[in-house]
Structures are given as C-alpha cells and as structure tokens.
Length: 112
Length: 117
Image 1: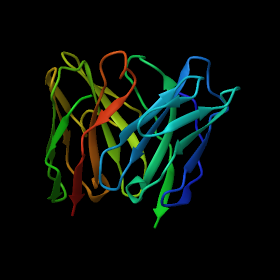
Image 2: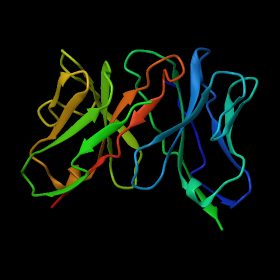
Image 3: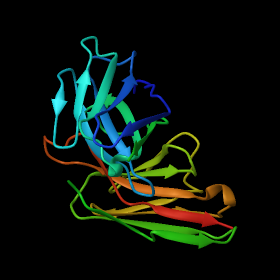
Image 4: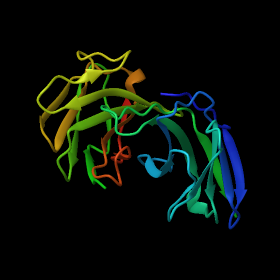
C-alpha cells in the first residue's frame, strides 16, 4: 500500500469548512483513497473513499487531484463533534486481507 | 454495515497474566482483523483471522504472544499472553463491509482498553 503524508494537526472554527490534505505521490492506478476518523476513545469510523472522481456523501466530500497524487477531505460545516484524528489511507479496493496501513493521521480540533 | 461488540471494554491486569478479548459480529464475515493501538499512537495490524485456518500474523507479532481463535464466521478471540506493561494498549477488532457499496470499508469495534500493572 502506498504511503501517505498528512499534517499532524489542524484547527478549524465551528461552522466553517475543514479542509484536510493528504499527499500520496506513490499511489498506484488501482489504489483507492480512503478516509477514516477516530474520535477519542472510540474505534475508527469510515468516512468516504474514492478512486479518481470527486466523491460526496452525508459526512464529507473528497477531492482528488487529477494526477491522484494528493487529495483533500472536506467537512463542509465542522462541529465540535468532528474533533478527531483523521486518517488518509490508500489501498487496492477489495483485495484479500483488506489490510489497512494507518499512518499518524491529522488531529483536527474544532474550536467554538 | 456491521455491528461489532468487544468484551471486555477495559481491564486492568497484573504482569505475567493473560487476557482473552472477544469479538462478536452481527453478520457472517470471512476475515476478521485485530489491531493494536498503543497510547498516543496510530493503529497497527496484529493479525488477520480466517475461519477454519490459522491466523496470519504481521511482522513483529507472533502466535505464542497473541494466540487467536476463529471458531465460526461471527466470532473471534485474541489472547494477550504473559502480559507486561508494554502490552498496555487498546485492542480493536474489525471486519470488512459486505456488498458492493461497502467493499473495502472496515468497521471497527469500540476496542478493549488494557492496562497492565
């Protein structure tokens, strides 16, 4: 699985959009970008994933650059409950083992 | 999606003892995964548990220290053997989502927080 690079921490004001970047310059053509988050003392939670097109669901939007070497997770209206560690992971979808390699992630703090 | 229950949610154990963590899933799954999260750190995969075969361990983890059982398609256990304070961690069970919409997603239990004195 390709390695990802994320800033260790970010701050965001409540109600504003939170934009979390991720670099994955060695991503392969068949690797997807997945985003998870982990709220303190809880198990990680799936947010969204994509291959090359931008994706949106009820939680967030995922913007993947045309060369697929980086992506941005967007929380359109951050709330205090969005404070968590956000992990960007790239892997081949559906491969046996479903091994996920977690990096250090970004600690997002949403401030009132 | 999948609902995953882990027991115990937390425990405090003495050095040298062993603890078995249980993971129950509300649907049948082929593979179950055990992760460890040491204090202040990210998640590390310990092993993949397949029903009907030996678990596959990641580099740095061995069966004698972390024996795993997988008796059926909805249940697995992880034992942390001969514990030392360095084993103090959160241990998490996870499974992959089923169906086209969820393929590739991992669902996690709430974890078992282990403190070794």
